[in-house]
Image (cartoon, rainbow over all chains, first blue to last red; front, side):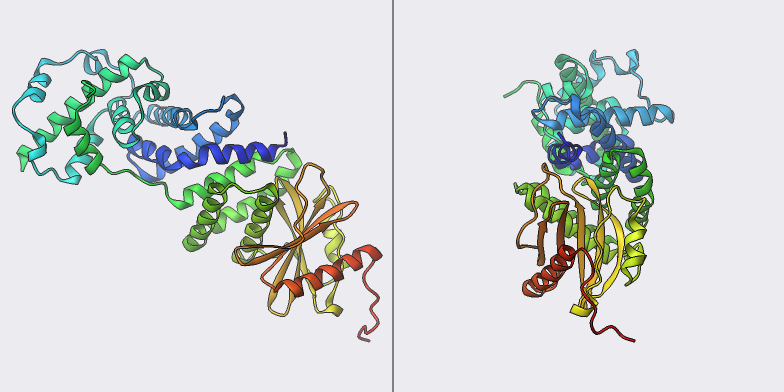
Length: 178
Length: 235
């Protein structure tokens, strides 16, 4: 097979997911320019590894490469808390958080501003931000998220649940400040 | 309902959180870098490095509208299932459009075939036939290196009145699609043929009949293996 065919197959399979890739990188790195650079680098890496891609949906495969590139970028620059911290990031629920979730207040009734929601998500640590973005904005299934992040499905579910309760707490706090 | 889901919060996030769309420029950057990575041999990549840098330079210079056009061309290109021939025709047209927009029509500007033809030697692994058709109303403008269909190509530039004609030439390859007898891509006419050695793809905004006339002149000159006899040469 000629090299060009390979490039065309790659472009046809992987380029349609550019928006998803950029959105993930943009949320993880919280910077436009850096997100562009990292996504471009991730695409090149994906192109190099394309022979290892076994067909099917290229999206989780690509997003896995993008997220790894982002975390490498963050780690190298010492940004954010990218390493898993047992105490902070444990999947055990914090009873105080449960109270916040189960409380009578309904977030829906509050007028949450777009900027508040975006800011609250941006404040989550990257490991939680990542699963939330993949689930809510990219509508990936638990299995797909597990594939992207490289963790078991059960961990995806608990991490997602933890991310949501933290987001709820943050939104409730943001609302009270008004 | 999935007990793990939190529909209320999901709704808020889906509605309020921003889904960042990739800038059009990023798509172009990626395409360029993939094609650059795709260049097979070392010397070819060295030769073409400067050309790609040239592209990148002007791409970065904020020619936003140009990138918009390229991005939509690329999108159309990938969304439509098209034949290999049409795909290559599209690529040739893209290259034609780029050559006009980037103010990078020719690497060697000369109407003298004895200047243009030798310029390619050492830059390509083949020697494209170059003919001056000024007598027929198609003066040679120059030549440049290009990269089409995954391989280096010679692009010869001719003019007819105010119209530019790009003639892409590369050695015949049985795996590559044959050139179209006549095809219209985005308002540009694409016609081509192949002889024993080479493939020729012509692109221009010139009307079909004039372009076909030019093609006939070029084929005739190529078949003769020399420029057409120049009976009205100026003293």
